[in-house]
Image 1 (spheres, helix red, strand yellow):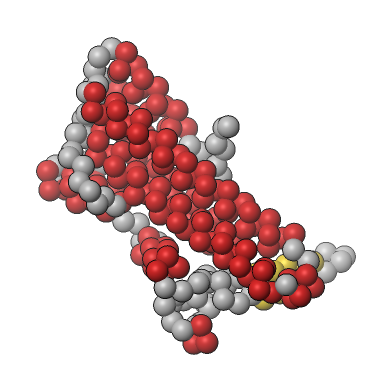
Image 2 (cartoon, one colour; image 1 turned 135 degrees about the horizontal axis):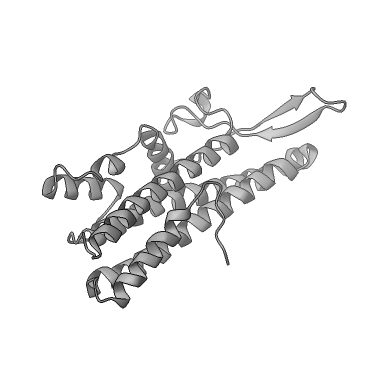
Length: 234
């Protein structure tokens, strides 16, 4: 089944072809070839799963009747949080698997615990001037993203309240259900403030686009260098 994300993901096919061509020519190590085909499908699976949860969340918020949400509040809240959980879990996992792909294609050893920042740490120690390093630095939005992900994984739910927004721009007022995300997800539910990310649907879609952009850029960097060197690992 094709994976059509929101953001251009053309470097996926490009890197896949280069690795296949290098393998046919005998210019990629068995370890790099094996590990790429171990981790790359897993990362794509996580991205597809994240997109599924994002699409399901958007559908739930736009299709649920307001009266129905009020009557079935418990079930409605559970389903919304289930999709939010799935989105953050899979998105974060995709970034961590990306680190494994980077390290294996650079010929770096893989340890038991590897996260997104691990790729930057390993390469900066062994190749302090490598041009890929800026691509692997944590973006400024990642801290809040991880705070949300780790909180909902280990401590508290994120979507604890919702509000109804009314748009009077058209002939008939349009209503929608909006879940804000807490500024501090670890705050107790009754003390939470909601100013930074007032709409979970907008926030999660933006994060997914950013994650896809990171993957696409890193894949493009590796594909260009592998094509020029005609060999992997780099």
